[in-house]
Length: 107
Image (tube, rainbow, N blue to C red):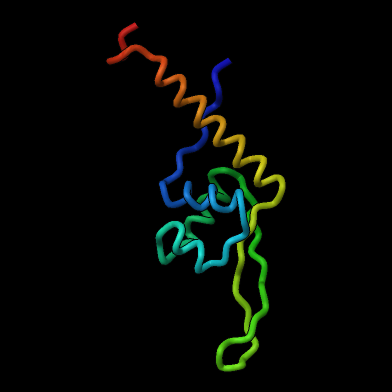
């Protein structure tokens, strides 16, 4: 049976998926990983294309000025991690199929 292809992601979203598979990431960390200044856009792409939840929790902290505040931290749920692994397996299988194909599409 042929593997079902995963909806294609841009490289920025793909890097975020790999990172979130391992650890929660703050919005700022996501910006560095992508790299982009609008990582919530790419989180949204992961949610819509791969069906991930990727909740954003509010983490309280105190600023250097002593003002209480919070920052957003994205994390992958256990179901999200399962879906990311499934998509990665489909991508790998599709790449294997492509490598087995004769050069130039000749068969």
